[in-house]
Image 1: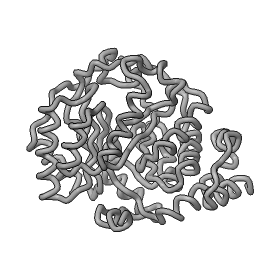
Image 2 (image 1 turned 180 degrees about the vertical axis):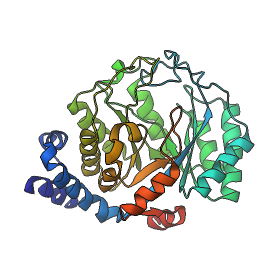
Image 3 (image 1 turned 45 degrees about the vertical axis):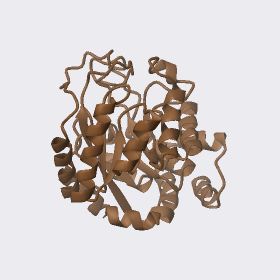
Image 4 (image 1 turned 180 degrees about the horizontal axis):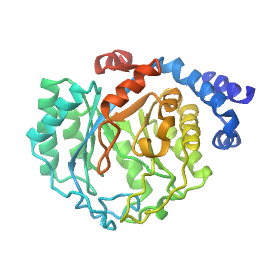
Length: 332
């Protein structure tokens, strides 16, 4: 349909979609989904060609979290039977980096549960990062919760390239998801990381009983934050969490969400993240027409798709993996 092509041209000309146009993307008739994806691909290919960035997570600290986030199996409100352990030692974190390197992941994401890291945990991560840089020269993203300025400075000095702290939902819906920290707490952490010279990474979780207007607000908030990398998670409702049994998504809507995020944040890395396998199902490959990045391997407490299947999907779609060196050259 011409409407979707007009949206792509508008975005490529440096204009923003109106709220009405953004909502129209989310309400796109299923019969026009392929036309919408084709328009999103025009924007994606303009900035990223057919390259796909791979990211891998290591869950360095699991559970034992005092926060009450309703979606999370690691939170204090969760009764989900997950593995719980304190911060991994340096050697274990470095070992995970080898796996990321072997999987052709350009970015290695060091994640830890909790409100924020202790100084000792920051020291452990920084020592690991120094060794990872020497051995594998991977791009490193840290996701450790709310940061203090001196902690952010140490992470940057050690070689952390990117810091992730998701806004998760819209400002107006935030209290429905968690009350143990504020939306502004999350925003300020993203800003702090950027101030310290780390690339800001912040994303969302779709399917947490929000309205379509909330989804538009999330995309616009991340544009305002100038997040370089935007993980778009789709809720994988885990038994034992407050959002247990929530099942609002279908693969077609997920593709519309990815298209919207591409239109609103055209130059940014849009990453299909947690819940990809469960919510996109057999339509996963089509997500690459809007997004230019995926996670490989497992997530925090849920399993991902076989990595060989991910590589095959990328190849069969006519895309190719972008290596860390190539990405750095683009950023110069």
